[in-house]
Structure formats: C-alpha cells, structure tokens
Length: 299
Image (tube, rainbow, N blue to C red; front, side, top):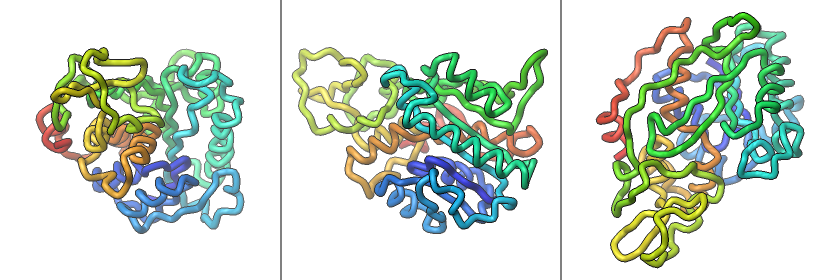
C-alpha cells in the first residue's frame, strides 16, 4: 500500500497501519509543524516528508500508485471553539486542496480509498458542503466510546458505504462502548469527571500549574484532577492514553508540544476501527479490543 497523509500531524494514520500489520510501502506525509515531523520520524524513519499541502503539484509522487489518502483538514474555522468562519475560512478552506488531490488521484486510480475527519461541532451547512464535495455523507462517532475523553468527530470515507434513497453514506458501524472512565487512565490522583473534556491545541499548557483545592473540578474547557493537595491538568502520559497511544509515545517532546499534537491528532483506536473495514468490508484480523485489553495497553 502507498499512502499520502495530508495534515499528517503526529502520524496517527501511520501508527494505525503498523498496529494492524498492514504493510505500507511508501508513506508520504504533508506536514509543516517541525515538532510534528520530529515525532513522526522518530517512530517511522521511512516516512517521506513532502511539505506544505499548497505545493502539492510540485511533490515528487507517482500519483497513480497511491492507494490511500488520509486527511484531517484544519478545524479552526469549523469548530464551536473557533470564530465560525466556516469551510471557506482561511485555514479550514484547505479542505478543498485535499479534494483537488483526491480528484487528481481518482483519475489515475479510481479505486483509491480515503479518510477525512473533522469536528462534530461543524455546522450542518459546512458538513453538507464537504459531503457533496466528497460524494458521501459522514458517520459521526464520539471517541468517548473507546477512550476516556469526549471527542465528537465526523468521518468521511469510501472504505465502506451504503446507498440510501437519495445519498451515499458511510457505513462504518459505531463501536461498542468500552466504559473507560478518566479515573481508569490516571497515573495518580482522582476526579469526579467521568470523561476528559476534548483535548485541544492548548492541552498540556497547565500541567505544571498548581491549583487551589477549592477550585471546581472543571473550569471551562480544562479538566482538572485532584492529586493530593493540588489540582492539576493531564500529564503527557495521560494525554497519550486519552488518544489511545502508548505511554512513552511523546517522550521526545515537552509536554506543551505533546499536548498540541495530541489535541490536533486522531484517536488511534478509532482510526484502527475504521481501517479494519478496508478489506472488502470485512474486518482485518487484529488484536481483540475490550475494556480490559485496551486499559492494559494504555498502561
């Protein structure tokens, strides 16, 4: 399999293929954030970095050989946490560059598979535009089903679809709820909050701050953990667990940079779930995913 990963970030897609024992011959990564590239190359030195997506026509890629395209186009203009500029905003409009690349590859390889992700808080208007551009309506899944965080996301893909009376829709089933709570993945301390508030690009910035004990358990978008006589935010290990990564995955980075990448990134077990339907709509053999086994791996 040859893969192009746009807005690659920390490389969740590459890790998912690895965990599923799917051989990747060439993996092209489009990413501009230096520490994201650093982390990706640390784990997979064979990844080919191609740079800014706006320069895609200059990339040295044999496009007819591409089998899979991943895209997590910027959500800043779509998210309820942003200014709601919409899909035509300066950052989220890069989605249309992904569409250009996808359409280019489709002409050379009609069987190319793709996966596009974006925030669940995007407006129905913007979701409609994106769906019509891609020719398929998304499935909406919250990572809270398989991790200890709230992370509501739309996923567009042609891996498995179904025809309805008027449209084509993603036919990836919703995974069962594994019942993982925030307390299950903490390295120390406790909280009354069942699920961590969705990680964002500011995650990890308050990890060394000391909070007075009379503060509420959550303040705005920050989930606080009672740890002895203080309140704290999630540490790097806990943030990795919230996204389904091994504890040491971001050890090469400072906590603020790790939080930024994890906050921007994809939930690893969710991507594995979606990719598991790649082979003729049937599940590829993979490790059993239960509450107990996942917690064991996260620890």
